[in-house]
Length: 345
Image 1 (cartoon, one colour):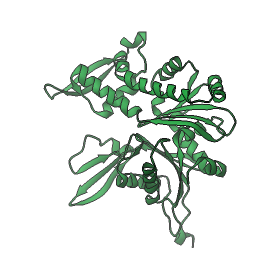
Image 2 (cartoon, helix red, strand yellow):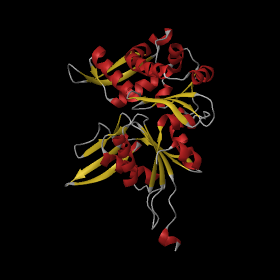
Image 3 (tube, one colour):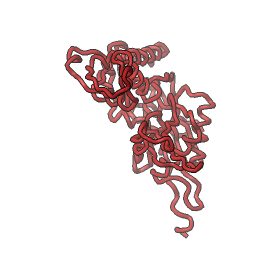
Image 4 (tube, rainbow, N blue to C red):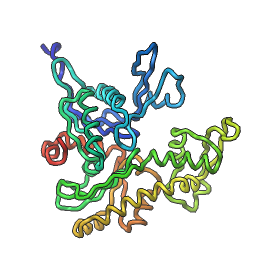
């Protein structure tokens, strides 16, 4: 009988991000942490999944016409439902989930931007159900980030979190299991990469790909120009606009900071606007406790310093900022009270 029915699949929490997807399994933690990329091969009119995650990202910009790579999310929401469903199926399978024997699929807690529309939320729910889930709860990303960062979301204390992801920047002010104020701006790590690519085209007449822009951002990127910025250099390769030939140039950290200035300012203005909506007592708590940064783009050098200077508040980057949203969604999955009060059924 055990063979016939098969083991019951584990429940899952999924942080379906523009840049990366993370899957959390109770008692195991994060078991999948891979780029949100799917590679599909078409042959004689038949399509098949060739690779997913890291293996698919390696293929971006390097494949023949028969193989296409897809990023099914843009600005934090699903832009291609069919590809998103297939990608989720692949990641759920990697996590040991999916339908098994006569058992239905796993229960899933999925993260959504706090300003996503009802249509966008239905798309995420549909993708999770069609990927094999039997029940789906949605949790807003600022709340999940705050839980994952260890903030006291269930206490009568105001906390402020800024989650800077690949597609969106989510700002949340939280107290007593409620998102007192939340906002979402479609700016994040991907916009930073685009800004670097635009700067290279404008200043150096060089066309560079997203992966190259992302690499230089991680290597020498900074949110502010520092005195030593001219001495910190990196090399970046691309195609010369005039000759179309490959060319490599050397760029300084100060240049990359200049390229990122507008994007960083957008994030700062989002934080300042959120602070204006804080109620006086909650604002007092935030002044005392400061702001917590999560998300992959929170690792950009000196972005905490810039935010601290502009807001006048203490700002700290959470421990393990890349995983905070997934960890928070996982805790909501495991805690029935959190799931009932913090998630949208």
